[in-house]
Structure formats: C-alpha cells, structure tokens
Length: 114
Picture (cartoon, one colour):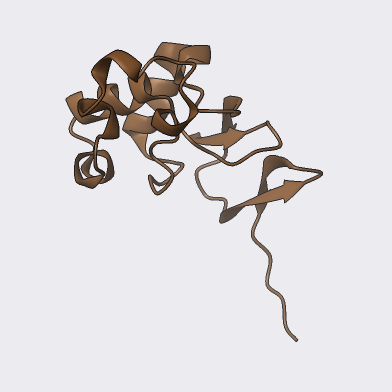
C-alpha cells in the first residue's frame, strides 16, 4: 500500500515548523532547499505563529519521510489551519489529490478529453 498525506481542513496544505525541522533532520531534499524562516526568530517559531508554520508546501505528498513525520508527530505536524491525515491506497493506482468542499481527498486518476 502507498501512503499519501492530505489536508482535511479548508485551508491550504502546510506543515508546522516542528515537522519541517524533523524533515530536515531526515534529509528530505525539498525541506533542505526551503528557507527556514524560524531560524531567524527561534523564540517566535511556536505553533501559534502562522507565518512560521506554513512550511513544506512543495514536498510530494507520497514522500516516505513526509508520511513518517506526520505519523510520528500526529497533530503537531499540522501547519497553520491544516489538519493532516495519512491515507493508504493500493500501490498500482494512478492517483491525484482533489479538493471537494475545501477538504482534500485522493482520487484515482482517470483520462479526460476535451
């Protein structure tokens, strides 16, 4: 089974600063490339600071390290106004993340023509 991280909140997908730092510890390439804004204001990088808890938006949602961090930290991985959840799908499914009524879900990718 493949695991994918989705956002069940009505806002955008993002990680907390704590989750972002954990991803950097694990060597996740996209997290290492992203600027750590919390490094400049470490005392302000708490969970209540929205501007410093909107990290990791470009990390692939099926990244094994991302899944690991969300499972490890659970609610503490949630970025500003995010509610992250790990879902499992069969390995052979071609998938996309879709949003309905503000909440994300994983759908099987289908062909479309126009």
